[in-house]
Length: 119
Length: 117
Image 1 (cartoon, rainbow over the protein chains, first blue to last red):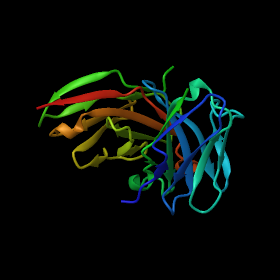
Image 2 (tube, chains in turn brown, cyan):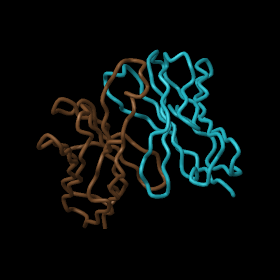
Image 3 (cartoon, chains in turn orange, cyan):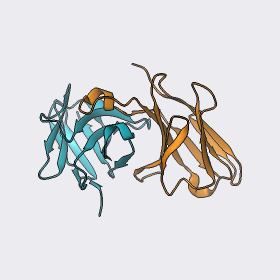
């Protein structure tokens, strides 16, 4: 089965540094997402991306965050100046919208995540 | 109010037995989707099953079935014939609104399942 791939699996950075988390969504998918999960907490939506622009973002996704699809395959999340509270598992996901009630086409595929640790 | 509530923080289940994980949701939308994901200790999020609000039949995927009770706003996951590899965290999630608008999901707090041999 096709999968979403994320690199790196672990990233350690110093507070104030910029980090870029990389994702390769499934090739024919149209929607791309970033979610995050702080240790012991719920998975939270950050941003969705469609047709080369942000379609929706949460209040977490402030000016320190940006997303980009620089070519036809990669989807990146950049955090400009990391804070301690940015430490979390970051998940990329992709989705191919389908007919209203076709359950298999509604599957949101997640990558394995990037564990970001800000020191 | 919580949009997705999973009231069971943790459960033990005997190998080969069935287990039901509770999930209730809150939405005023007529069109929505409900998802269950499995998160093993390695951290990845594995899709298990999906139920659309207009689906008339309960969704099934192998050993997973979703007991969808729309009037009660519940979407419980049933895992039949539990295996040791089922030990993981399980998340219920909801997408509100039309399917074509994308899959912004709201997640519940999760239920940790430990399967005993």
